[in-house]
Length: 230
Image (cartoon, rainbow, N blue to C red; front, side, top):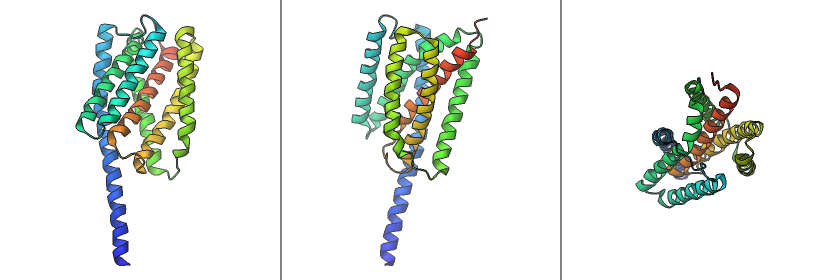
């Protein structure tokens, strides 16, 4: 019996150590991924980069093709050091995609302040959601299907607004997106904490996309409501 208890305790301790290691590595890689994102955004602003400058539809399809190409490559290399490099390459690309919004926001006299506010707000949301996962015993795994459906709705509405250019629709999309991706932070962090996700590269990709989308939509809201052209 003692041997059985020792074995059970040993497996439990090993599992906890593994989850803690995955979570720690995920947070480190998430922090590291911000560097190529910033570099990509800076370069994109300098080059006035935009996939949507010509045809919005072609740009949208091209973006999806490149993004899903990266997803496929990350999935294939996630168990090796190459996976880290591919992930960082993806975050650089996402920085490039962010540059159009950054450049637009910098056109406001208070643009730099809006960007810093969005960054701070995103950090607060991420810290709050991660803390809730840590201290709460609630199971958030049931949110997955509802959140995925919400993302599909956002994608369709966003694609429509590429052509409609309606500020009110963009504001609504951004508010809903912040709620959905904040909840996704709960879901994805808990996947690591509970051992549902054991690969830190996959975990980082999921949480990075959550944080990225919270930031983008928060900055959009700040630009719509608080942008000053004077």
